[in-house]
Length: 144
Image 1: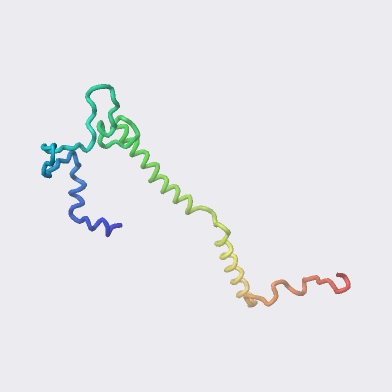
Image 2 (image 1 turned 90 degrees about the vertical axis):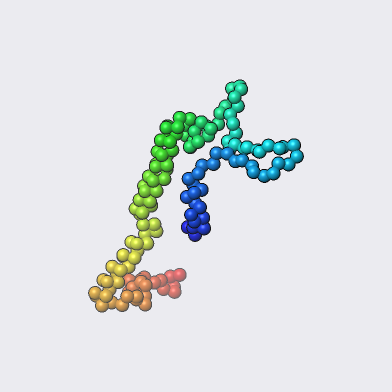
């Protein structure tokens, strides 16, 4: 992403600092339109009638929270603070301190404890029989 932004080079601050207001066409006039065309960035508000004025005309920094510019900016700041900062911090903390899923960490600690106990007693780590054959009760052929 930064490599894409670096292509703009010194033009990026110049693009961000000049807010566009209107565009004037410098092309040669053709046909009946002999005058220079002036186009507004935002459509002009109608003078006659009771039409609704766009909030962007009243407040160019409109964020969509309120028609009052001061309340709109504060609501935007509070919304972004709680929506991003608090959600990331509390959400990340919650996910970090979730219990061990599948008890994988407990199983590893238990296996290390059993290995240390068997090494201390001089027993092999893995026995050829999973269950002790002396404690197993097997049925005879006649009891089946």
